[in-house]
Image (cartoon, one colour):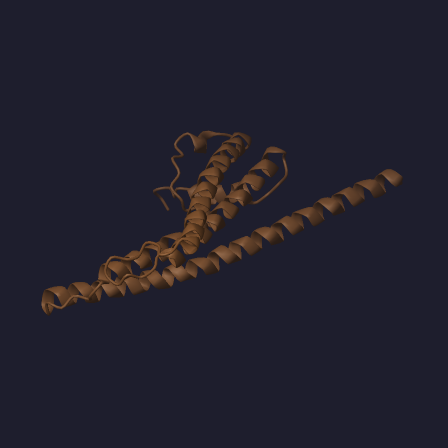
Length: 203
């Protein structure tokens, strides 16, 4: 009877841990999704800006002054607000002609290695960008855009935050891969398999 109670308690604790982990992942996923909306809005604005600039240049000989400055800033916002969401949806480029042939556990080990490497690289980028922003604050003036002379420090900070968010998202992949190695059932590998599935010619 005592043994049954202990097993039930252990199963309950494991369920609570999985639920807590799932909630944290959902919070991160929601954050990356809403953060990506910023990039989507900026992308639409950039398309409109480039269209107006090109039309004005060729039809009226009146391009938008300083359009390169505006596009430069928009590119920073668009890219660094989308990186983490790309990882959330497993949309980053993978060379998987060997990976797809591995069993699940080997895939998990490969994911652990690539996650660690990616986290280190992205964390280094975020740290360097953050350090650059702090140096600019402590030793003004910082770099500016070429036409309008806008300070780039806020956008460097934006890029540092976007990189940090990507590193956090990669950490969730790392922990999910570890769970898979130890035989704990997660939806992680299923998500990867779904994203990598190639429809047959009949479909």
